[in-house]
Length: 243
Image (tube, rainbow, N blue to C red):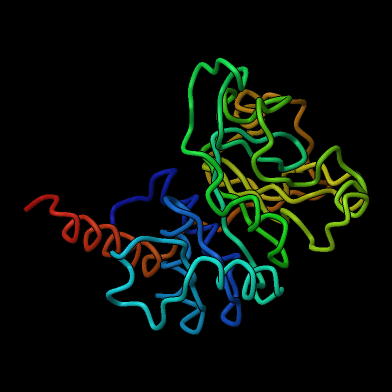
């Protein structure tokens, strides 16, 4: 029997479950990659994963194309059903910051930047977000809009001329959020095992909203945990860890 799951494993499993077997997914680095690979190794074996990456992934990729072709033809051509992103800051409408913390001209912290995330957030049919939840990352107002979510809420995406759905799911180590149908504010729809509403409120920098009916997230199955832990172990070995 696998050991009891931790909060990060719960988050990764919940995020993986959001992906469908027929999806074509543009994958962000870090936690999105773990969730996407878990999905493909469990319930979605036909899931297509696409990365903007260096040569490390090219060795086992089915195909490799240039960055201009990927973005101009595949991404902007509307060929991705879903994108999967993380971020350093997020606001109530799913806008993401991966650029700077503090003023842009003189930031407290300079982050890795957008990479392909701005294009993923606007051109994929929808996108999912995975982030650990804390007051410093779930903020009332982000310091820089790297990836456009629902903007100021409501129909802001449509008014900006963006036809895709934007962020449709936010998975954290505490809960799952989805946008309200009218306001587009990210709203709690499912709470992970052992987590309370007060914990969610305490780790959110805005007055968090809960759906009229909030589900209880199903705990990871033994199979999901075994596959995820084996995935992490193989990744560690590939990177020369625990040698």
